[in-house]
Length: 334
Image (cartoon, rainbow, N blue to C red; front, side, top):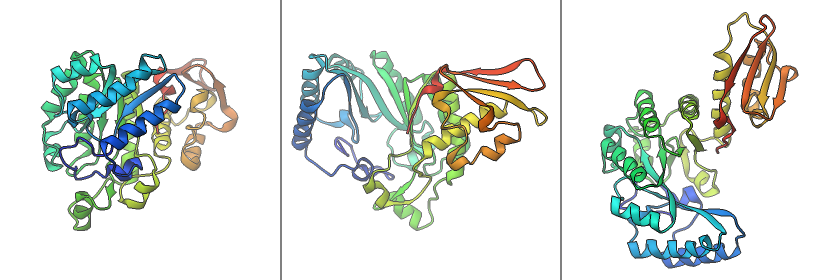
């Protein structure tokens, strides 16, 4: 539902480009939903994204949810989630959404730093964003938080503080979209006139890797890293830390940090027992970490696959092994 229900267009946003969906009326969107659901075979999940779902007139919210619930009651649709803004919810509305079958509400918080939110014209404070997150949970709904590191005025220190606020709220899921510059947005004008510079790719990878590890260690699933590579988005991408393998680069950095923190320069690895789901992440994008890891003897020949979620480093000079257990390492995100 690109931009539907939104009170205005955010300085960084072009939902039509980001979702690959053209502008359409609500009637057209509802007809498309009915057609799509009729062709689906369960079990499946349904999400309403791209706009501000609770910014729609409640009669339209009901029409979309009634359509979805036809399939939920037939045991084909197993869950419904929506995306909205922190300033477009209320306890009464959240209770109604739960009664209509919504199970998870994702809030486009972007940041918990009030100064950053003000500079981006979001219209709410960091405290109001936190309160909204708590309202979702008190209503008996699962919470998702969407974060946007690298907004105008956003420093790495503020970003890490945003992550700490997120951890304290213990959401079910987190999405992280590093800020990029898309054509025909306010941010594009700011960038053109030197008022805004996005984070470099390396900085975005480093900061997102720190955040992802924090989320993993607190049992929080990171289900998206970076904007999807829709052709319409790529045509409008002017600047910023976008990469087709961004998610893989971030997870690879997390894994590298986990491994090397256990080692000192004189260590030699006899065997690395690695969960099979991380095999493709170990060496980094185009093998960027291979030489770095080889200095400890971590090579393709010393890596052994396991179907558990336990990483084990066996060292040549020690009988003991370093182990790192993390069930959320199996989570894959874009």
